[in-house]
Image 1 (cartoon, rainbow, N blue to C red):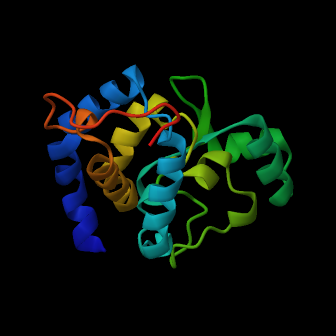
Image 2 (cartoon, one colour):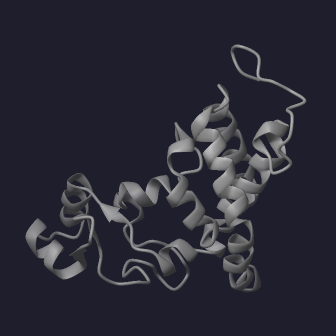
Length: 182
């Protein structure tokens, strides 16, 4: 896994323009079945991906926390919300709370999360590759291809799965979407 993580930023950078072009096409005219396709690709990838072998997201990024996350985690830690905020959080440029420390202070040596049952929504939904309206999260997805091997693999699988008008080849589409998708 260490070797994969070492190579991932370069591989992601090499695919960045290609991925940006894909998102531009997806935003312009997303396939009707894109939400279902993303769930399928996500599930297929995570059948073979063990996040506990990687945990690169916890080692390299700080998730945003919403008010519900703060209340839930503070209660779990038996802290007042303000004390939890002072001890563990900072306010970012976007006026969002995130953990002060990277790697995450709650990441244990075995890559388990000590607050897993009450972890932030951003952590529960990571890497966001199975969410609705996937075409709207270009920036986070492209950033995640350099952090999460599964995200990188899902993007590559997406490009192989979509009809030609969504791929790098461009040109005249050989196949058009029928009404109703597919």
